[in-house]
Amino acid sequence: MIVRTAGETGQLYGSVAARDIVDVLAAEGFNINRNQVNLNQPIKSIGVHKVTLHLHAEVDVVVELNVARSAEEAERQAKGESLTSAEAIYGVDEDALKPEDFFNPEAEFAAEEE
Image (cartoon, rainbow, N blue to C red; front, side):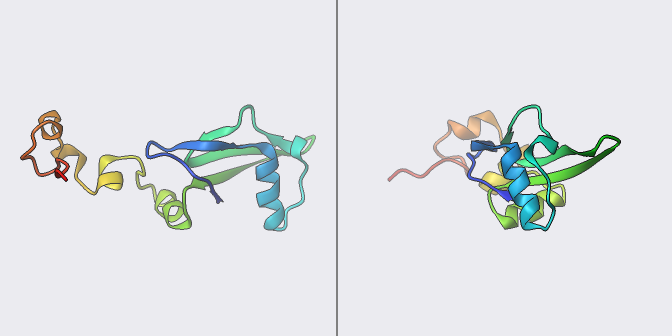
């Protein structure tokens, strides 16, 4: 699990690179080098990502990295729950939302005037 800050859409404000993966694995007691991490491009969104580790000429291992905004979110994510749906963000059923709800001041989901 890697905790990073991200926006509501799940886009990370930074990224997770090979050296971050090496650090996380080292904290768990696994000693690998950065060049053993097969990561074509940095991870830039929350979610469960599969990363291949090249341990030996004939030995590759695939690990799953759970990138989340918090430990609680990582647990929900590991269970397969959506973190970027309207229900997860706003606490409303996505199927109940209609475009007119966002423009009707009397709609249940409309923002209250200050």
